[in-house]
Length: 618
Image 1 (cartoon, rainbow, N blue to C red):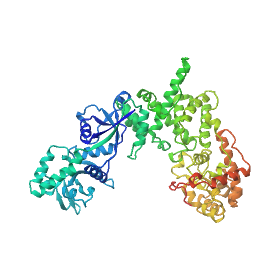
Image 2 (image 1 turned 45 degrees about the vertical axis):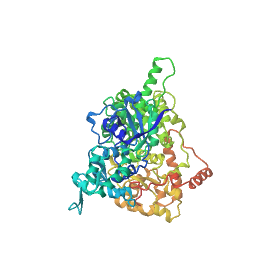
Image 3 (image 1 turned 90 degrees about the vertical axis):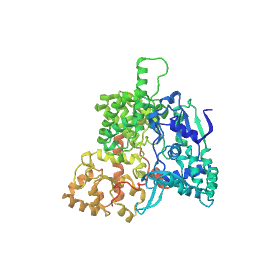
Image 4 (image 1 turned 90 degrees about the horizontal axis):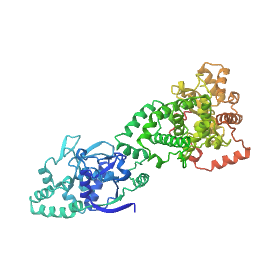
């Protein structure tokens, strides 16, 4: 069996926490339970009720590389080396240790996230009263042990000395596992025979549950592989914070005195200067490092003619867990530089901010290839191929879902193509069907964002300011995707939802121009645009033409002709970006596909996002 189970005395677990025999792996994220949950936990323990299983991992084997950290509240200066690492149960053990054993107030917060420091007490009277819910017998007391009301002006209870605790019959739970517990109870009982009886019943019915409490523990043996540890943690973690590979490698690298989190934070700060990279995550960076490390090993094997099967290019989770600090340090700086160049590449393609990035995931192989090739990727010929590959992935919608296998194929295939080989898989597989234009409705679709970017890349101008909508103007002009035939006009004129919300009826415009458009007919709003632009109709028409729109069809408010002409123009734009013609279809096939989309739930139709910034001002 890869694990063992055994109920263990709470007192032994708390002692293991205090001495450091039980610690956390460095991938555990700090997260404190709120005051109410701690009271509920303590109430369950005093009743002898189960509070769930905890899971630990034996230290040894490859897990020696996990850097341990003490549980919050433990003095870490004189700890022994851990025997086990706590995988599941961090919040329960932290709360129990701080409340019952630490000798200090518990560091917690209230429901509004206001930080609190609290001692926990049991009211003897309430604990012995069967009509009182046990949680109501657990009291959370401020750090100075004085309870106040009226904004601190009125003292309603004072437990700031042992004598005052005893007089009030408020037992401090910090004494539950201490020898001083009996002295406290004897002092309480000495006041009267009635109190003597209460002290005995409180000790037997309440405190005995605490001091004899056992918690079921599942212990993963040290032979358990890291990938299994990650999987198990994700399945059992009830704290609401999923574990990812980055946390596991953080713990692994920390054993070599390398702080992965700090290193990534510094790199992320440098990368975040470029708005398009702000959604990048640490795991994305590790995937790119894995691609580079595995590609290098494969390339060296093939170049030297080594015997045996060449290692594969990969970045799956199990491979990320095998990354070494040497791999990370060998490629970290080059990859960071490649990501900065990738931001420039995306800007040239009309993508300026993370919100408009079709696929964050596609950055991984793109940056890895640039890091691997260095200056080779900066030639004119390489640029042409990189662009074809990039737009094939976006417009072919091939980088959604689980894409680690595609990362690996494209890493190797794209490098080969840039060096004169065959097209990579993504370029060969990509296609764009005519009917898809009608079902691209919002940023939920990568291709929707791709068409928007292609218009800006192609040099579309703002209709009022007559400036190209590029990186120099994008943020100042508050550019976004807006309707050409406004929503109100479409509804008033019976235009169906699919065509009204399609990318065909949208384009990139500044916020000011969009306000000029409003909800009126194009035949009306173009006159307003001319006045605000102080331009002739011919000048405005020239700016409109940069959006692949026939202005005469706007001025005539001919939606049917406009939609047909714009659809054809966008198909040509898409075909040019992908380096292959879009798939044209018979009208019946297009109508059938539209009918199928119309029966799908709204989300499947790429429905507009509720909170899309500036999406609709009409």
